[in-house]
Length: 283
Ligand SMILES: C[S@@+](CC[C@H](N)C(=O)[O-])C[C@H]1O[C@@H](n2cnc3c(N)ncnc32)[C@H](O)[C@@H]1O
Image 1 (tube, rainbow, N blue to C red):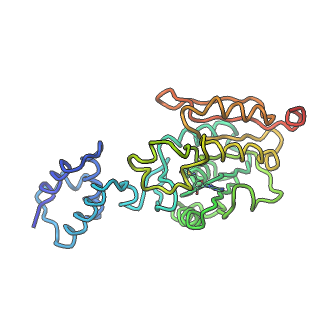
Image 2 (image 1 turned 180 degrees about the vertical axis):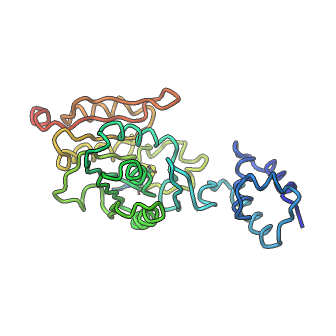
Image 3 (image 1 turned 90 degrees about the horizontal axis):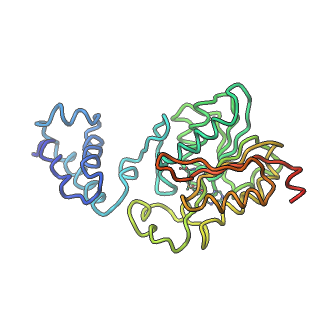
């Protein structure tokens, strides 16, 4: 029998930069207790099956698997979301996209919102949780991601959010939205980061988008005008070196008031523009 204090020492075996936190999260998960329990009861011994489960999880973490996949969940905004290897683990950076979207419309307006490439449903559900009167739709081309988002919609008490399987706009025929928001795949095919860290375990359908990483954004910009209400907004998250290219794509397609927003590190990670049919015809 080993104690909690003894297993906490195992963090030294992990090369992860967050080794101590990783071990705490895995141990708390196995014990089905909050992390504070580990330091309140350091002398408590684990049952044999608990220790075996912990050892298995630690071995998988040692091999590089993301903690969120091992736990099956990840916090985003104020929500606890189930995650799966069929789609991206929601990142804290994406909260900038949510904040920017929330700043665009007054609380009381009944805004129609489309989240393209919804994955776990993170963005759609965060917006719906802040603006219950908004009509939010999330789409993804991966069937298992749509099922996951639907599950998260129910567990986050947002059953009104609609999730559809769709290749970008394909399932939305003649629907219009005041806000179209997307954190699409935006990594280029040969980016060496794809061979490092957590992303090695995430599906390429959620990460990679052509030779320059911009294929999905180009496609969405070209199609968005058919689904945006006049003066509606299109917002993207993108890589920190892609803001100039994304602003150009939006301006060339006839979007106005095009601008980028910086994350806490000062990198431009969100770009948006307002749809103007008159400008688009002129382009
Ligand atoms: C970067 S992940 C973002 C997931 C989630 N929105 C988030 O922010 O955590 C991109 C998502 O786009 C989806 N996707 C990729 N190609 C797509 C397509 N052609 N149509 C719809 N969704 C697509 C992927 O399956 C993945 O879930």
